Length: 331
Image 1 (cartoon, rainbow, N blue to C red):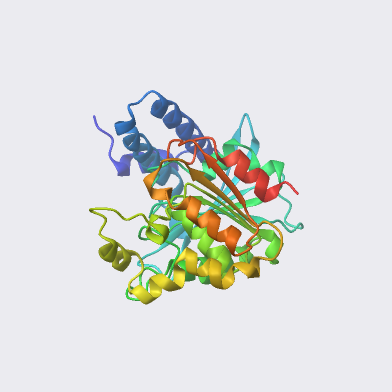
Image 2: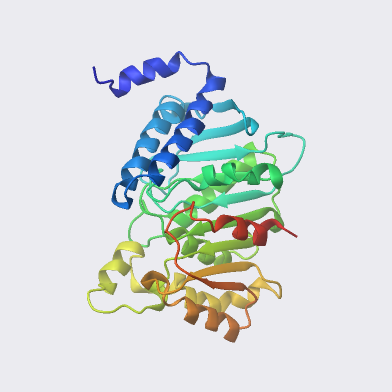
């Protein structure tokens, strides 16, 4: 007999709420093991399986009411993950927001927030799960920080599309996600209390958000960011016009978010201390303009940390996070 989603939900409802998170953590670890022994071409299926499991357990009927999920794991003690459903005027439909709290969470304290920016839409885990990687590395406990992972209804470029009202990613983060967190959790509301981490599209987005909102965010770490659209080279077959229209709308809107323009016009606003850590991967086409971006930051006098490293697998769990976290949070 093949179990369908309804029968699985009925089974899950019989499990005490405090124990449901164990299934999520266990399934994540199982899928990670499977992905290690699975051909690269099939790894996407492994993470799709995890997404379906986690949605049934965590999301199911819980997303609609934003329940708090508590659980026990042998390695971490009590893990607290809050899952919320957010209705935003800046997205096509409801989005999710996952919050990872320190195990010894104290509501009387004020915590910094690390925003874990997703690469894909609607919780798609094609390149792994950033929040679960931070959990595995014990970042939330080591630094006593709240980790927040929002979602978006289309591939997020962290800009406000000027022709599509359902693709207002920057506004969704700034006007819906952050105000919600600050209204429901004891977080710091000063600049030094907010950090950004991302890679690929979300790495580029983290850089853009810092440059556009230097008084809002303290530091960002961007690994293997997708900056080819900003710096080139475009090459034969790269349809720049269609990509710009799909991701930004008008050419004028692209220029307003273009990293090279932002560095020239707002780079000085970052001050005289490094607030941007930029990992570049040698020989990767999507980041081949990274050296140019680094040179531009030097030219414009923008303090930053830049690392050129050999290519890694394009994923959250390819080993780059510890160095990024050290830059962000080791003071």
